[in-house]
Image (tube, rainbow, N blue to C red):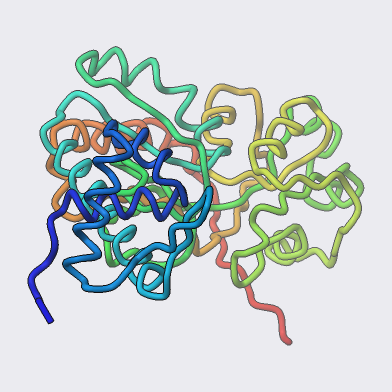
Length: 314
């Protein structure tokens, strides 16, 4: 049996035909004639000394050998494509693709992008608002901003500001509910996007932190944190606002935090990129800008008592 690999062009022809289950469609994808594609696959079968396709009247199907070969060939070509795109991005110092969750994109990034664009007109920013697990190479992403409690040792990881939760409301609502005890009668907004945090840090834990026995369950519930904040901005009720998502509204007076007590979540946002990429000019510029922007609103925590969440007995 011959151990050397067959020609790459023959493997590429096989990969396309196996995906389409059609020699004609594969030939069209590769911009070759059906006869040329058939010749490439025939040469691959001769190299293997076994058929890869059963040629039917108007279709083809994989033989056992073809079905065994197809997944590995597809994975190999995907790895080549990913490696090539990643290498191409290394040569590009003017484009930066960032992925972040929809809430962080809407409440933190979007209101500040003008400042970054003004400071770095040479960088073209592209955003993908998503929470799915991403692959930097496959998804052609340079930087990811992710929220959670887990360490990200496989990547360059810069923890951003400490993340806390505090009741936020409009100034008009704050006048109606001047102290924590009165808050037990206020319309409360629930942000279910933080339910994954352990230990849990909902309204009952905040009331615990201020010494009030209250376990509220009634009120509008939102699966997206920015929607909960938007409801608070509209005067619908009081939300437990996450630092990154409310700090600008608090700093500019649209929301207030009248009680001076926040819960430390044990979670936070992290700036992630492949190790070594943090020194690329556009990545470094974006990271430095984010850190400066976070420092601008650091005074919002002045006088704020940040209390660790107490785990309830099982």
